[in-house]
Image (tube, rainbow, N blue to C red):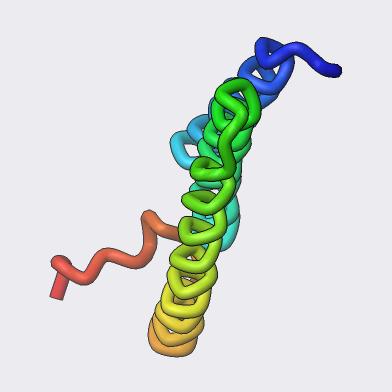
Length: 100
């Protein structure tokens, strides 16, 4: 059996990559994918802790988190498509609704 520390290290690495993607990239789709990567890293850590504990409650919680994430993806992509149709760009620096 794989030690839980490996899962946690992988989860931390994935979360760090997601944070770097949010901070460095300016493309809205890449930023959105980075946020999803961070969410999946948290899910991996949650499942790893549930595996160590021996219960299925963490796995059930991850199932609900994935369900909410699917709704988030649908709404987020719809917003990105609407913004792209309006502004003709996916760059988050170019899209500033406060600039009138």
